[in-house]
Every structure is written in C-alpha cells, then in structure tokens.
Amino acid sequence: MRSRVVLGVVALAAFGAVGTAPAQGAPAAVGTYDEFSRLDQRSAGQFGTGDSVAGQWSWRTEPSGEYTINWEVEEPENRERFRRSADGEWLLLDGWGKKGHTYYEQRVTSEKSGDAGCGQMTPIPSEGGRQHYVRWNIPAEGYCLDAEGTIQEEKGGPEIRFRHRQVWSPPQPCSNARFKDRVCITQHEMWWDDNNHPYQKTLDRKVQLAKGLGMAFRIEQTFPQPWSAEMIRQWDY
Image (cartoon, rainbow, N blue to C red; front, side, top):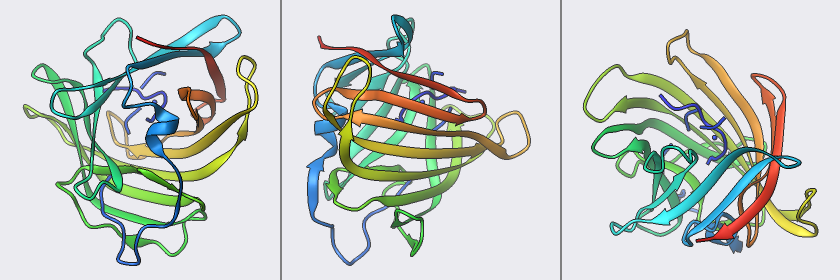
C-alpha cells in the first residue's frame, strides 16, 4: 500500500471519503480549489528543506476528465485519481496506484461534515462511495470532513479499514523561504488504519497549498514523528 506525503492530497504518500453538501446549500465562495492546487494545469513542484529535495508532485488531466497527481518521480504512472462530483461542488477521490496494474480503490462507508471545530457534524450522502475530499468552491469559514471506509486493490485482496479526518481552513497570507507574500489554504489531516498492524492513528499533519503555485507549499507533520518541508521549486510542463 502507499505511504502518503501530501495531499493530500501524502513520505511520500499514507493513505488518504464521500458526500454531497447538506440541504442548507453551498456557502459563499472566496476562491476555488483549482486556483490553489493547480490540478487542472500541467503543473509540478518540488518540496524539501534548503536545496535538499524530499519529494516532487505533478498534475495531469486524463482523457476521462479525471485529475491525477503523481508523487513519485521514479513511478510516473503511480497516481492519485480525482474527479468532480456530479453537482460540481466537490472533488472526489477514487483511489491511487497504476490503473490496470496495481490500483487501490478507496470507498467510504460513512462520512460527515461540520464546522472547523468538527462540531455540528451531519452525514454526507454517498456518491458512488468515493471520498468527497475537498469542496471545489472554498467557503469563507473553515470546515471539517470525517470519513471511514475501506481500501482494497481493484483485483481483490485484503480490505484495509481507514478513517480520514480533515479540517480545511480558508485563504490566509503565507510565505516560505523561497516564495514570499502568498495566499494559502490549509489542510489539517489525521489518518487511522489497520494496514499490517492493529487499527491505530498513523498520520497527523498540516499542508498548505498556495494560490497560483500549487501543492506542498508548507508541510508540518507532528505524527508519527515531527517533520517539515516546503516548496522549493514550481513549474509548468
């Protein structure tokens, strides 16, 4: 199975759930996810410390309309696969790996959304079991997503149980050593699974995405051990 660095949208890669917004309607937007992730461009970047590169990412749009991201230079077809929800309000995660070779499908069995403190949580209706990973239209207030489900290689094999809890924060000023005076959204994610061990927490980190630059602008991991990195290069290809 993969080990996740950012993304998560994941050293690189741990693992990375589902739904449609409740009936109260979508909140007013202060931007869109594509402006910060650059998922609809042939964009790429590297992250690390100083001149030391810890990892690299690159987006590609497939003929199917899926947005796919690679986190491993040596395995360019090992990709996370995302698509827009039917109503256009969410980005859905299907799974990751090499389609037709070794591909892990992630399917949720329950998912809830709520406020930035993970209060007032309400169920999110399923959309084919795919994870509603992030809102496409960024609301002015932060929000929480909490999903549980299973991961299984598409040709069969053992099921892995997981829980993925995320808090997405609205745009705020941000900078790192290479790129000053930017605007970022922040993903705080925690992950639990039973992949070759008893069910337990395996990841806790915050990741910033910078408007006009993309993924992994800054990474601050606190579990399983402290680790940090930031964007050091960005380009289109």
